[in-house]
Image 1 (cartoon, rainbow over the protein chains, first blue to last red):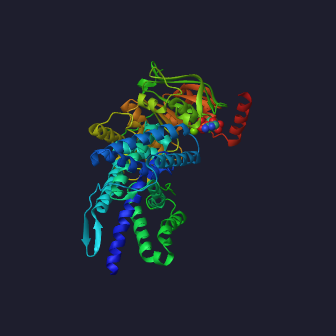
Image 2: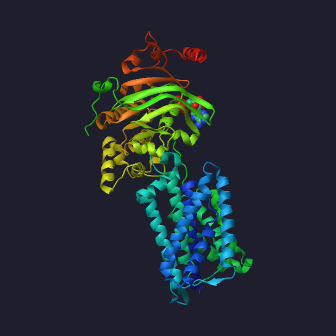
Image 3: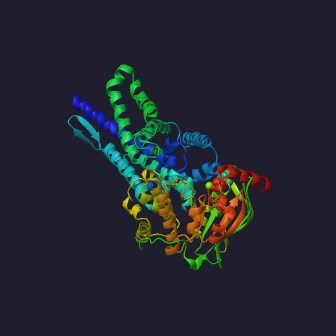
Length: 295
Length: 286
Ligand SMILES: Nc1ncnc2c1ncn2[C@@H]1O[C@H](COP(=O)(O)OP(=O)(O)O)[C@@H](O)[C@H]1O
Ligand SMILES: [Mg+2]
């Protein structure tokens, strides 16, 4: 009985953690490149979701539709960087943050205007099967979605650590001035980061929305991704997977064991309570960059 | 490459006056934020294969000179407001710093600016940005740097933020070589290093010049050690060039001996007080 609950908690926690991780990795990629905290990351996920549904609605093959969405979202990322953020180069981090807040409001409004507020069903792109483990039923789409996110995060971590372009981008994350002095085109790296974040938003949509009823409100999932980013560390790429799972599983546990006594408050509060603890005791997160102090 | 044989000074062959300058800075004036005037009518040249020292005390404008050549001054809202800078025949002042690096002019900034969360080898790979490098060419370039600084090969996977000061200085110099520059700008490589390490670093600088043929513009407060490897030198004070000459001219110049090499005509160290007085006088005169 306890084992079943635990298994159920783990399964739903890991699946939720994966979606948090996929939104968090988009945050990190953008933050690293230009120290911009893109609060509109959830709106990018929402836009990718509805764009894909629009293409599905036109009768396109699912994978073609997703590839098209990824391309469009990549271009959107490039456009946002080029026309919203680049003109603000040299402004304070606060100004940049406000720009992304503006982006959030614009995309949010656009979402509602174009897609309405009525929930709609996202097709079962990742299958509809369920597997029984004991009495716990596990959805194929959740397993595939988690695997898709884990694979993407691992791929991105490898890209930033082991390819030349990725290393240029990591250098940009460390210091624009040093990168520039070595001949790295900093502006191009930042643009590329936004493009990648757009593609990642599409992957999140494909991984998580399969078979769900969705409305523009799904953008708010990004708020739970914030504690994940801080837990794993703002600059960390691979770390978001562990951060996401810790938050997801913790939240599931709170939901299973504390929510009955707190009228559902514990699971809502858990990620943010964790965030406060991280900020207090380890501000750079589990894998984030701390300035090297040498004696 | 062969192990370094101790040498007294630079090779005589290239110590003659330059014929074709790689770099020429002509009557340059530099301002920060459109108003703060820092360099006044600065002119200097670096010939093919030459090591040129730019000496001067703290605040003289040495770093500003290097950054105006590399255009890195732009990120501090600085600009060349008068005069010209040419590198291999092209105008390079107030350009995109990345395009200057692509032309083959790389600055090693003051203060051992390693990419501290990246490994030694990752630092080097980033510096291959300006060259078209396939896997094999990249490997060759890395091995060349490891040839110059074997310690970097030993620590290639170590996070560069945890290297010692001397190792970090080797890394930033080696890193600059990845782009196969024709001209290297070095900003105070001796700063904060022990005399033994300074010796090692300067041997490497001389060797880079000799064996790779890289021209070098070397900024130093430590005039003695700089003139140990330089063919010629300039002295900068309050944003103006106040003295120039070959290595021997500078080494034998009484003023320079007193105030930058710290040796008076009688062979004794001048006291700090005298130097202060001299400064004060210069300020009135300048
Ligand atoms: N970003 C800046 N803005 C305004 N003034 C500056 C800036 N950087 C340097 N300066 C001024 O220019 C002068 C020369 O500085 P610098 O070139 O760093 O000298 P050095 O390298 O010889 O010590 C100093 O008076 C310094 O205060
Ligand atoms: Mg300086």
